[in-house]
Length: 119
Ligand code: HEM
Image 1: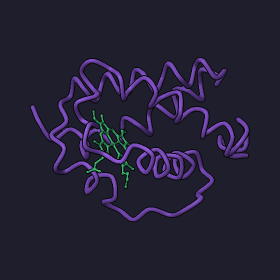
Image 2: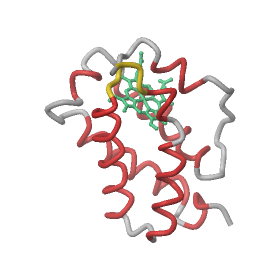
Image 3: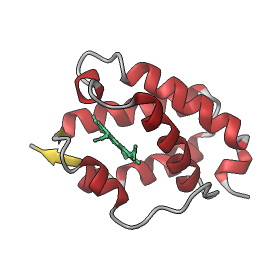
């Protein structure tokens, strides 16, 4: 069974993404990245992307998708760490078991080199 199915599918992913971005979009350091972004569209794409990461693609993403999405954004390692921490906390607050939290965070971490574009 995929992690997507194990934790309740579409409803769970939507709640996770809503809770995650409700913190990221108002975060004192992180909100600057999102001021000119269509936030609803970003959430919509992120729901699809996280479903894909959890093993149940609502849509299949090409190689280079995440790299292309960020190459103009100038994201620091510190900001990446803050985003990853919020994501981890939201997984935990939804009752995801620790081994599964670690699995998902490993997938998030594997994107670092494509997301961090600034020292
Ligand atoms: C593993 C970590 C991350 C993943 C998997 C991820 C995933 C994505 C995806 C799939 C998109 C494209 C959405 C679309 O096509 O509308 C996107 C866009 C974006 N991401 Fe990320 N992201 C990550 C980390 C971050 C971090 C750390 C930041 C900033 C602190 C960030 C800021 C943005 C911004 C501003 C956009 C919109 C870019 C634009 O529309 O020009 N992301 N992200």
